[in-house]
Length: 133
Image 1 (tube, rainbow, N blue to C red):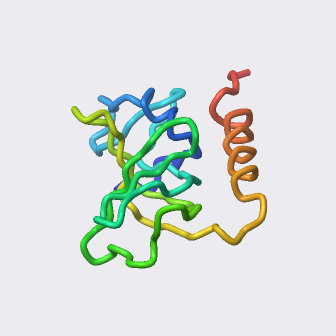
Image 2: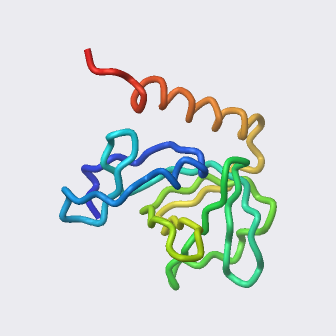
C-alpha cells in the first residue's frame, strides 16, 4: 500500500471508469488523471448476513471485503457507513471491491447522505475536474 497516493471521494458509479495504472509499480488505478489506491465511500449498506456486504449509494454497487481478523459482527443491512480502503477493479462478475481499511457507522448522524453528496461534488470541483492554469 502506497499511502502517498490519493484516497479519492467518489460515487460508486464512478469507479467503473477507473483504469489500472501502467506507470506505477504498486496496484494503483487512475481516474480523472489522478493515481490512487484507496477510495472513500459514504454509502448505504445493502448486503447480507452471510458475510458478503454490498454498498449502494444510488449510483452503483461496490462489494466490501473484510479481512478475517476484522470481520465485524455489528454491521447490518440498512446501516449508513463511511468506508475507506484499497480499491480493486471489477473482475468478470462486474462488481468492484473495496478492501475495508476503516469503516464507521454514520447511521445516527443527521443529514449524512446529503453531506456525503456535497463532499463528493466539492472534491470534484476543487481537485478532480480543475483545469491547469
